[in-house]
Length: 355
Image (cartoon, rainbow, N blue to C red; front, side):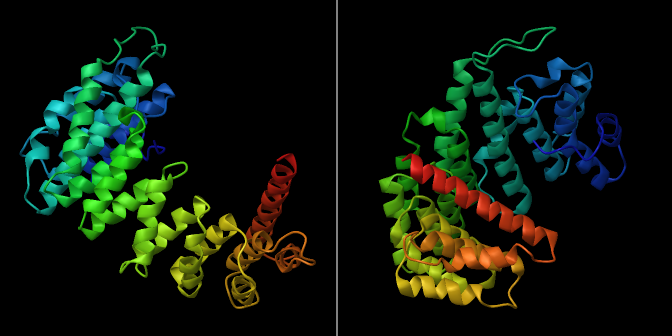
């Protein structure tokens, strides 16, 4: 949960403002402000019961759920109720999930319903078996509630609306323990059958959160990199995740991205994680590191990648040499990046020695 932009008192006041902009800001900050006041991160099961202003917060959120209110207010209030662990949000949002219109307002409500459900289930899962906050312990969530959210996510994966399928991919990862180790097969199956480009991107992003992706997920990502989408942004994201899983198949696509400005830094970080490479691969990164007109932080990343790509027993390491030079850069941010690079290399060296 992000730090609130308004105090709890200001948020409660501005819910009734004549300005729609102020009202939206107030509704968006009610849950974060209350959670900050009780000193707990969200989502939090029945958080409103833990503060004297909790009932006022719930009343304020419920007051903007009517059909005559703008969709952004209604959806944001629902997400807030889920974040505060209020089960009523499932009933409030049920009808939203059955809409198929593709107008912006309807899509916002659908996505909010899934976000609210995910937050509610997360709050319920975290509350199970933990001590409740005094003065009045709240009853633990009923298993039926979590089962209901699980079924809601399963339906959303097959929903007609692409935005709902997209949100379901994220919900799968955030509620991974509900799938008894079957989250990866579920994501891979969904990716194999999905045709909508935005939803496919969402599924690839979800796979990236697996720690680490298993063989089936990696094979699905490799198929994307090798296919017609390999040169698109989804192919790059797939390659970055493959590098995190130490799959060498990612290297050609990552090297290709060194020529794309907005992908270059992430590509260097992924190449560093992957390590190794042919002499031609090393030379490609070294050429980049020599470009003095590149942003200095990018040159630090290139030097770090070089240091990881060149084996320790092959004489002078050009990456280490460049990092030593950049230690004296006039910009503090660059010097800090170099210190971080050396710290990572030292930690990796200790890990290697221990193994």
